[in-house]
Amino acid sequence: MKRTPEQIREYNKIRARKYRKDNNEKHNCYRRKHYSENKDDINKRKKEWRKKNREKENTQKRKYRSSHPWSVTLENINSRVNGYGGRTDYLHIQNCLSLKQLKYLWYRDKADNMARPRLHRKNNNKDYTIRNCKYVEQSWHSAHHNSNRNKSRKDLDVQGSVIT
Image (spheres, one colour):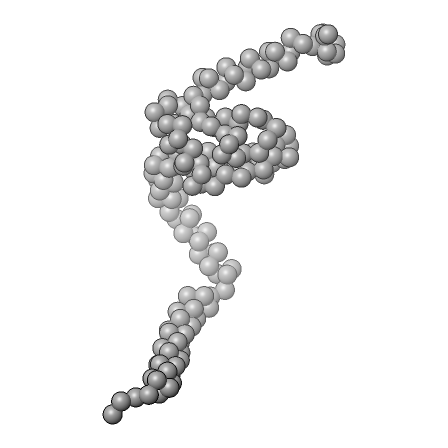
């Protein structure tokens, strides 16, 4: 006996409902099992684990940072921008770079071939963006900033007013 198109549609709806119901029950069981614990208990266990396994965590971090050096750059940028360490001169600057974009910059500028790569902002008054940043050697970076400081100091006299 052949089924009509309406019967086939009805049968498919019933199958789909049953499939969704089964999957939702499985999913809800998973949720209850893993997320029923209190967040405070989870955080306590994380802290305890970190105390017990401090060396293991540090070796994992070192291993990750050595294979992903651009992640260290991101940590440094975020600490500058968020004002950690009492620095307030970066508060007007935003970080628009993600980890993926820093990885792109790393390979674009061939920072893996540099002895000590540093992230350089072409315009210091602008945000951290792909267009405004590039990786350079630390020696060039420090010489560049020192020469800019010396130029600005030469234009000032002893009392700090600009010489014309």
